[in-house]
Image 1 (cartoon, rainbow, N blue to C red):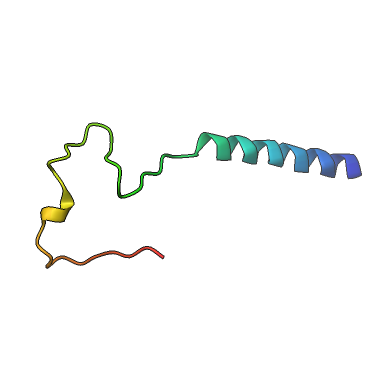
Image 2: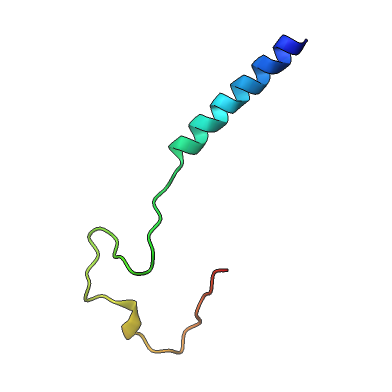
Amino acid sequence: VIALLLLTVLALGILLYRYLCHNKGDYRTTGELAPGEDPEDDNSNRPGSEKKEYFI
């Protein structure tokens, strides 16, 4: 029973590790442009009437 439990925990750990390594993702800050994005197309030129989003 203990061996089966350890084997199950080990298998779940391996699957979780593979999932987390595969789904890392790319995170960009607001200061850097995305690849292929035009620097002239800046969002700061828009009027201030739209809502701003704040992430905490």
